[in-house]
Length: 259
Image 1 (cartoon, rainbow, N blue to C red):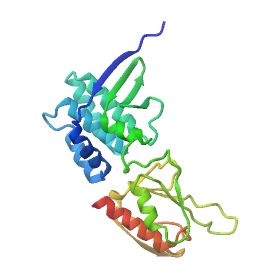
Image 2 (cartoon, helix red, strand yellow):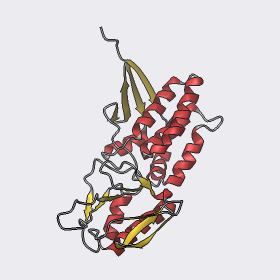
Image 3 (spheres, rainbow, N blue to C red):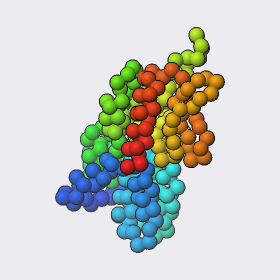
């Protein structure tokens, strides 16, 4: 006979008078704010319940490199015998994926996670807020369940910025370099960064971009960005929005990420 499920339950307390403030803070998260939260994860003397709450905030933001800090926190909680909180941190790690998968479910009041013979219930009022809106987390997390917004033609910048600030993925296509040539992979822009892959794999975060501008080479003048090492990365020519609009949109997204 299969082993029965072992159920665990953890309730995260957020006073009613603090809930709106907590949601607003999470909605405004940037990479700089995530860095500060990750620094808290293994701070000496942090209450285990508070550590679990911070971990879930980090997980909802969906930044892949946060996994290292979450794993360190989980090991610390296991060593101290705080098993329920350690399971909540495992849940936070599962949330980092753009689509967390079948192991994690959005519940009315928080989360359900089933791993092997263990089912964890987490009551989290901030998570419940996002779940009621059909989302896994705040706008810094690209909403991959929402169809991407195709940008075409001039005059798209203001509307596109509003959508990106709400978590949308913006799609910019490029004309083939030659007649009947292979299509260039589209550019995907979001509040967190940019990618050329449909699954947002290899997302380059705005916090990793040092500068934006134009690159002049044998293909002409193209929109380009540079990482901390200063090496330029040019985008293809002939984007589906005017190049000046594309550069303006990227500059505004970068400014948002730094504010």
